[in-house]
Length: 166
Image (tube, rainbow, N blue to C red):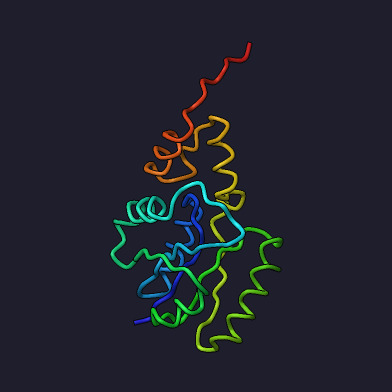
């Protein structure tokens, strides 16, 4: 069985993340979405909330699992028996940082490859940061995230009534 992990903070998970997961599932028998702790980020949602949102978003896919881990992603990959770490690339700006991490992971665990996947064109502009910003300003995020995520964001930040243009 060829396993891969797809790490991220997923704060919150977006349709772009789910698109990458679907692409990864065409290459691997099982893909674990790994909610990882990033010491440089202060998440909007608690870890348990993010895990629940992702589990609900992928419950239709039997070959997708959801876990959390604190530590080096490559260590989780080894313990999970993964042959690959999936990383999404939206733009060239993502590549430099991701390449550095991939090279370090290769040094630490040569048997674990990093696989870069691009999302569908309609998701290349989408990020969790943008979703959080829209929600903070009372804008709808429907169509950008799973329904359960949109509902969770609307609980934290109620939608603002849109003023009509004259």
